[in-house]
Image (cartoon, rainbow, N blue to C red):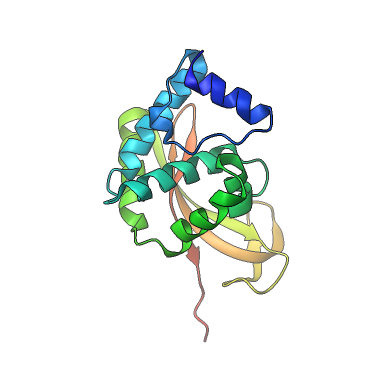
Length: 179
């Protein structure tokens, strides 16, 4: 039995899966092919991290983002990779680590160009509806795609688009002048 199958069986039985880099997991079949692509993507994105612990936390965070159901909060992501014990360390990785996000987004674009058969780069607005008013940039806005006014934030994104996938590779929140 492969390590990945054993880990999945423990996880479905209620046990906490070990916090190991997924690049070390042996692979079999279609699931193995996905894990191989995942390991290759992690290597491409996180190789710029100077410290091994940052690379490990980045791999865990990405795994949690891809597997957590529903809202992608630190708590839900931590539940996918190690439970409450992982929550604080992931929070510190995301909120106060010293890594720069720009080289990672550039590495994602290069990875997709090499491996994803790009057909187009798409730039488009991204309306982000919000219920409250305490997030930065929240205002009443018009969404031309839906033809509706909504309460929320406005962002702009660049997507890599191919025949089989569409992936956001860069985005920025639009903040109007306060004056």
